[in-house]
Length: 252
Image (cartoon, rainbow, N blue to C red; front, side, top):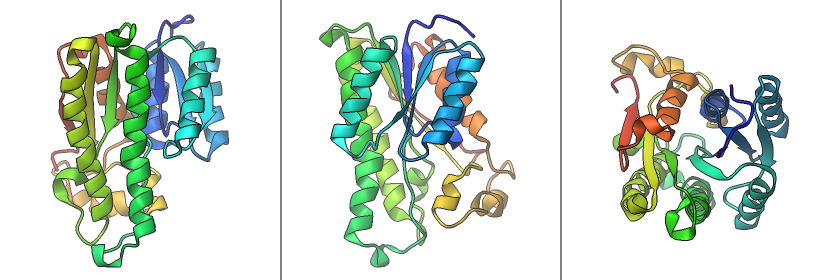
């Protein structure tokens, strides 16, 4: 691990699951890491201490990406306390309890899209303002965390979540083309059934294991397996890859 990183990677929703795995791997690859969380500051701080203990640079920042004022304050702290921003991983996202569309409230839908879509747009906006050569930056990379649900629709479970991730796919392709000549690459990773805590927040803590037989590889994925794909897309090894939607779903 490098002791003096040059660029910062912001990982939203970085306190658990895929986000935590990405934060740790980014640090191992020499990035300074801004570990964002919405509520679990203890988990975010634990990741920061783990990174610092291994010789890296990290900062925990609590901010709800659906709240523009909190989001702007987060970027202000990164500007002030960490090296220049070079990467954004739009990982923060929510699911809700399983429901049909005819049972969903407006409040549920508004919150789903506020976090999963609007939050990602606003974080990307701020990242582009800092990284784009058009704005005096030196380039960078954005990886949006989508979902295989964007292709599958998640009927009778969470069509709203699936639709929010389909929006992320389109956002990825459009933004990639918009900033390709400005030194910024934009890609998305679409995880399949991954064994993380997000299933519990949707009221189905055993979902990953129960759905494993539907996966050609016959097992759920791990957070670190998704993180490897994300961090590769952030790296110079992916220098000619932009606008890509990479499925990490065991063949499902």
